[in-house]
Image 1 (cartoon, one colour):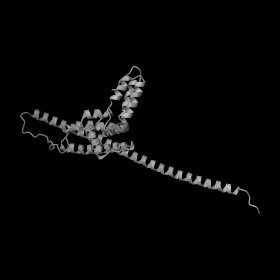
Image 2 (image 1 turned 120 degrees about the vertical axis):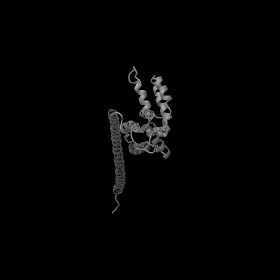
Image 3 (image 1 turned 90 degrees about the vertical axis):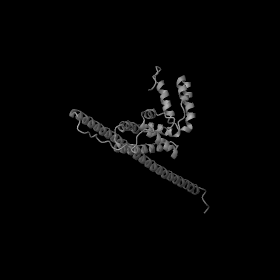
Image 4 (image 1 turned 30 degrees about the horizontal axis):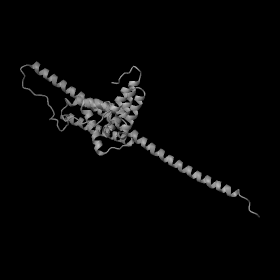
Length: 275
C-alpha cells in the first residue's frame, strides 16, 4: 500500500520513483538510483531519499519480469488470475485434470517468457538462455505460490524466484480418483449423504477446472494478440525505415542535380568568347 503524505503527493512521488527504478536496466540502475535519491534529498524528502538509496539492484531476470509486469499490465493481471485458479484447482483435481492444466501452464509461461525477452531486447538488453530460464522459473513460481505472486505484483523483484517443490504436476499426480463403492450400508440415509457429498465435490472440481481453462484461454488469446501487434509494429517500422531511405536517396539525387545545374549556369554565364 502506498504511503499517504499530508504534504500532498510526495508519498506517491517516491513510489513512482521506485517503480521506475526497478524497470531501469541493471547496468544503469546504480546511477539512476543516485540521481533519484539526490533529487528527493534536494526537495527535502529525506525519508524518501533513504528508501530510494536502500533499493537493491535487481538481477537481469528479475528486471525483465518487473518490466513485463509494468509494460503488459493486462496480460500480467490475467496471469495472476490464472495462478489463483490453478492453485485452487490443483487442490481437488484428479490426475487427468492436473495434466491438462499443467500443459496450459507451460504454454502460458513460455508465451509470457517470450514477451519478457522481447521487451528486454527492445530495451537494449537481450537475455541469455540462462536468464530466460530464470524468468520462466519466476513465472512458474508466480503461478504456484501466492507469496511469489504477491511479490511479483509489486513490480520490484530483486532476484529470480523458484517455484515450490511440492507444487503438483501431472507426473506426480496419483491415479484418477473414483467414487467410493460401498457395500450395503447399515443406513440408506448415510449412503445418500455420502453420494451427495461426492457429487458436490465432483461438481466443484468441474467448475474449478472450467474456470482455470477459461482463464488460461483468455491469457493465451491476449498473448497472441500482443504478439500480432508487435509483429505489425515491427513491420510498420521496417516500412517506415525503407521510406526514409528512399526519401534520403531522392534528396541526395536532387541535391546532386541542383549542383550540376548550378555549375552549368555558371559556365554559361561566363565571358562570351570573341567571334
